[in-house]
Length: 136
Image (tube, rainbow, N blue to C red):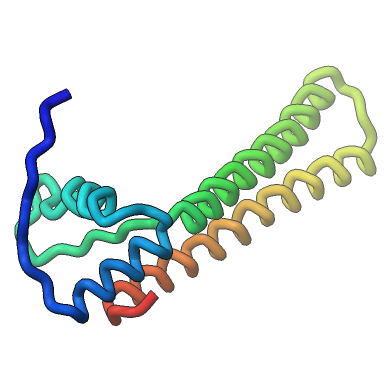
């Protein structure tokens, strides 16, 4: 690890208040805060300014990850139902009611995926709008 060097600069009193409030909210010190800021991508590869960069907090990222995991669960359940139908059709087994139930189950699971996708898309739009308006 390379030795650390000191960096000094001036901030207005109001910027120091903002910095200290942000550090307190995040539970980190000023040095760590600036380390995070320095590592933020300010230029995306192949893009020319102006461009937008959205940074997700852990809570939002975790919620999005959970939603994507939920999609996977519902999708897998739907595919399992459809595979069961295909297997029974190949074997010439199963009755009409069972097929109807399995297809309905698959449809319900896929509908849950679509609902989750729509909810996540709305949340992403809200985040984008909040960033563009300067809010959160």
